Image (cartoon, rainbow, N blue to C red; front, side, top):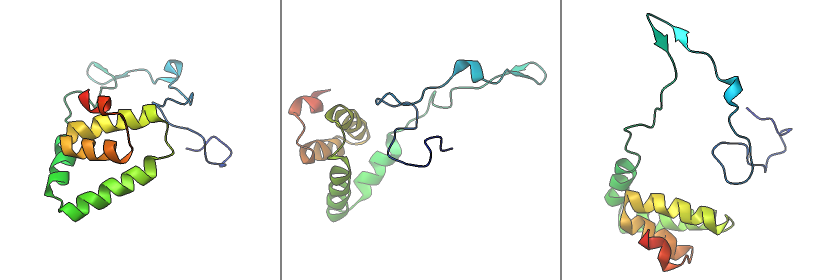
Length: 115
């Protein structure tokens, strides 16, 4: 839901690193009673966010990988370096070559690849 006057350009999601909105714990819904207490759960617990994108990257032809990395690099050139590095760490988790190629395209320091 937009709350910025539909002007665009602002960071309006959470989590973010740009001083955008944060969740208000006081707005949390109370647990529902359905044969005991029911509450929200952490849907990320136990999930693997890296195998599937890594498998897809490895299935791509070299030309597809080159286009993918080029598109990512072009889209991320204006992003602050701290966020570029954070995102590259996700690519590295999916596939080391994926992360390395994006980092090289963004001309990030080699220390990013070391973890």
